[in-house]
Amino acid sequence: MARKADRRAGGSVVDPPENSPHVVAVVVPEPADAVPLVSLEAPGTEIAVVCLRAGGKEGRAALDRALAQAAERGCRVLGGPAVLRAESGDPVTALLDELRGINPERLHTLDPDPAHVSFDEASGTPGYDEPAGRAEAAADALAAARALQLETGEPVYVDCYRAKADVRLGAASCLRHPAPVNWLVAGFDGRLTAFLPTAAGVVRWFQDVPGSGAWRGPELIEGPGLLPGLTVVRDPHGFPHLFGLRRTPRGDGGVDVEVVHAAQYRTGRPLTPWNSLGGPNAGDWRKGREAGFPAAAFDAAGNLFVFVRNFGHSISYRCQSVDGTWSPWQHLGGTRVADDLVAVTAPHGGVEVCARARDTAAVVRWYQDRGGAWTEDRTPPFAVRPGTMAPAPEPGSIHFRDLRTNAPSAWRPGAQNPCPLGDVGGSGPLATARGVEMDGWTYSLLVGSGPGAACALGAYHEGRPGAGVWWQDLGAPSYGVPAAAVSRTGQLTVATRAPGRRLLVAHRGEQGSGLTLGDWRSAGG
Image: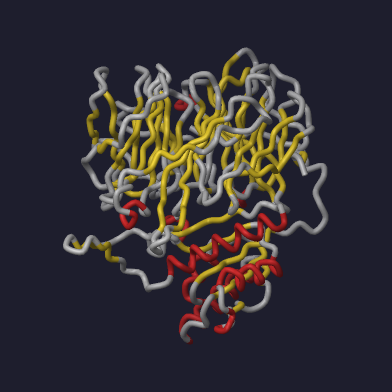
């Protein structure tokens, strides 16, 4: 059941910069490749297209139509598609020159490590159904975006898309690296930290003083080769742990893709070094480069589990025990899965993982018994939109958007049906926060990108999503998934990415009654 609030829950944006458009660069091999990516852009976006080659007549005509349609729905097209000169030499240098003129906040490109469709056992060579050069073009686009960010010091957010999209859902259905959720965390000293993935690695903002509007950032966390995705989970002590994929060129022309992990134990202080966890197919770089993006969760005892889709489209995992030792990669087997994974801590203290099936609309769950053995469960009674599964506040539960209706829902193991969370509209996964006190009750909160890419806030009695969710407009735009955190003193803060490369934050005012937030202010520089 959904309930709409009578008034907007968020304040105004008090320091909007002048002329801060949301500029998106679409960098692709040929004009036809840009068509599905241009279709993603919402009204108000400024779009520039850069192609490495001129392509065919039909592809150019299709892109012209896509750009005209974007203009009709309220986007601004920044001139015709730019095509790199054949004599430009190094494509990364040529792309960097183009990006300097565009100065994009976001960049869309294709997948630098596409999924195979066949495998020649005799030669050990994967087969692909994509034109040659697409992966290399995407890698060049990532390198140019990284160089631009290091040169300017300004974040460049990157989205890589699989070439094969779901015909019902479009390019949004094939994001290679998932949108980060729950990326705002509260430290033991009460100060907040925000982590976001960019072309040059993870950037963070952090508070100078608990509860204040003084922030520092964006600060680049060193991590050469990090791909533009991020998973953030907190351990049983509340410390944030970061997981990603790192891509490193090899001397033989190949590339190594490995899972990496870092942790923050003091707000504002350096993170631990990025620790390589390798990958489930690390013995063969051609297989290893296809590793899915990691999902992670801690069990109640403090053991850390990291899950990855492997080359065979099943799930592999590693476990770090409380004493710090890591197990080797182990294989769960069972149903072939797609990129989407979500890991959660179960009510009994173990860990569970859910994944979209690769060849059907089903969701598959793996869970541990009390002895640690894994069991595959193919009976979860729902289908999810790609890229929308996320942990729920309740142990063992997940949130997602329904494949058919796009409506947000919750599900816990054993439930015969998912619990609807209200038809709030919007897109993408929901982030959560729990332990919000209001009118003598404790609430769990949901934050997401609502209609028109605006922040939306939902609230329900903690542990009882079926009792009804109150949804409210927060009065600020959101490019990506907003996040929320509750400090050790109980203060609620919501953060969102806004045009102009800004991080906007708003704090709840007087605690104890209502969920009205104060004005939105920029964090850091």
